[in-house]
Every structure is written in structure tokens, then in C-alpha cells.
Length: 58
Image (cartoon, rainbow, N blue to C red; front, side, top):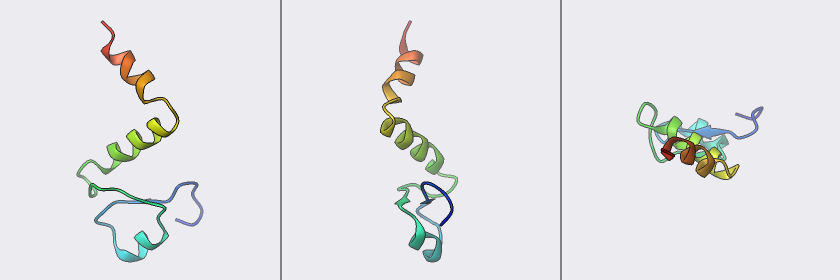
């Protein structure tokens, strides 16, 4: 956790892991946490609408 750029823990991680996390997901492991993180990163980089629009264009 101390060697990565953005330390993230899932909501049901142990307390020791969460102590080092800069972000703790609302969802638990296996319950959409990875999707939550990828959506967060895409939105932070301003790519969310670019990607979404690519899927929604007909």
C-alpha cells in the first residue's frame, strides 16, 4: 500500500489495510468495488463521458 500511486482498499478490507488507503470503496470485494474504482479514475481523468458516448452513439 505504501508503494503504489493510489492506495485503495475495499470496504470489507481489514482495519490494518484501510489504515494505509487513500480511498476506501463503498462496495465490498466481489460486490462492485473494482467497477467503483474504474469509474472514479475515468471520471477524474475526464474520460467518463468520452467512453460512455462511444457506447451510446448509434
